[in-house]
Length: 359
Image 1 (cartoon, rainbow, N blue to C red):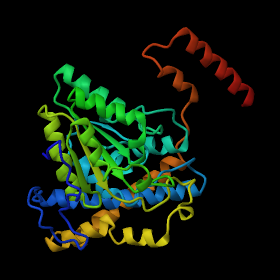
Image 2 (tube, rainbow, N blue to C red):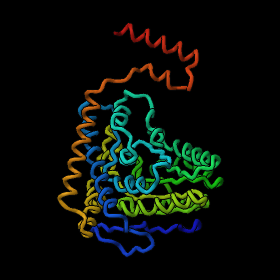
Image 3 (tube, helix red, strand yellow):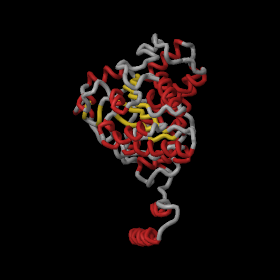
Image 4 (cartoon, helix red, strand yellow):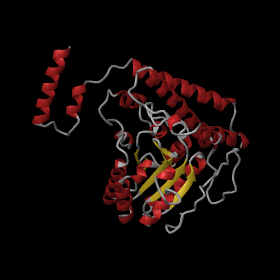
């Protein structure tokens, strides 16, 4: 693990833009062939499903959607490196994280459709609900990590946050608590270069986001966020360190948001076509596919498997969005507390009466 008093400004890279293995020797690439192929499959399926979510929003079936196109390697690589018993705290752009963790499509679709009132079902997969407020879930991740410490568990929590969130007070407080209490928490920052229309160059004066770890006395690591194997290796190391009592790590995955901030955004108003093309040349999925070809694992069989998986999930997503009825809105009163209070019971009756008038 890197020394907490220094940060290497060069991102850890195991697969170069040409798909060839780099000279990096500190981290291993020798995952089982089936795992290497599975990582590609999940990256490609995430991108296809991402496109289907956008299509559905454009057709008026969803209220909003935040695309993760371009960030698949960071999300899939990092999530694949932790245990299913570890807790994940996503923000709102983590489709790959949620897909890999097994969150049902009907729950993801309902969240973006606005027909579902929270994260019921997410916690069964040891995943917190989608966090729309910027950076607040970092504190939740640290709290969960500190609880695991007190309970004597060996679980690790991972807070997935964006570069813009590192400018908030909540993330500072989360990092400070985690460092002081040596909480088993990993802060995985996806630096996609833009906080809506604010470039990362105007968000901090430090050499990088990872350098902010120095102020907390914890390791900071920069990793190529478009390199799935590098993200896997760096996350695996940080999770092991946290699990063994070594405390938190701040990881900066250097990547790029190829699409709009959300479907309500027009990125052409603040970034150039030339910048987008430069980053598209570093696209994580073609890069990883080229690597698999070099090691003899990419072929028609894998392509067909991925295509079938994507088609099945896209069809399922459309079905649950278009055909599944919306839940009973009064259900929210049953899930606020373990036992419904008299006040909530009265509010539920009042809402039912109001809805009856509109029927």
